[in-house]
Length: 191
Ligand SMILES: CC(C)(COP(=O)(O)OP(=O)(O)OC[C@H]1O[C@@H](n2cnc3c(N)ncnc32)[C@H](O)[C@@H]1OP(=O)(O)O)[C@@H](O)C(=O)NCCC(=O)NCCS
Image (cartoon, rainbow, N blue to C red; front, side, top):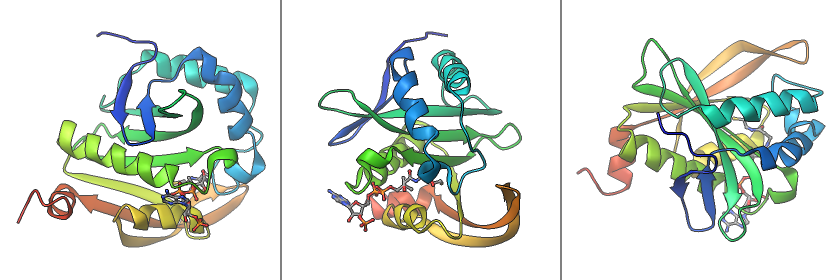
């Protein structure tokens, strides 16, 4: 397997989704450890050592390996500044149905970057990887995340009661999804 330190998988108008590099660790840790970012996530008090081992693992990984999560670094196309990350989970038992997740540093929220990154990721998943369906889960209280999922035309297809443990509490989640056929229809690739 070829491994690049900084390879770009996806390009959009303003962004690149690329492999993480060791130069990203400091900034990655600074936004992941921000309580506003972890509010609706399973983690809290994210440590520098966790950021280091996370990035070092991602440097060695490739997307689309059944049984793994791959994390893309989201960077500004103009200067390669890391602004967030998005994840692709390829399950072992059914790798044609994948799950995504996304996070932006608070400094870069409110510019449409998350929606742009997720649209690019959907294009990569359906067009380059040929997947059948993409799912995403959001805490029902996470309005900003729900807005991103709706902006990229994912559909709410489930309300899952007490579906994950966050900060010592069982929390409800919405399941969102989009089929390859729905995505192609929106793009005018299918009649
Ligand atoms: C979820 C999250 C990524 C959303 O970030 P975001 O910046 O609100 O989302 P977008 O990048 O799509 O930006 C949308 C906002 O940018 C504004 N905007 C400005 N310029 C824009 C442009 N050129 N295009 C589109 N939107 C633009 C929109 O009006 C919208 O503002 P609003 O929230 O006031 O309505 C962010 O809140 C986050 O990282 N949260 C913590 C992690 C998390 O909970 N992740 C979800 C788990 S699945």
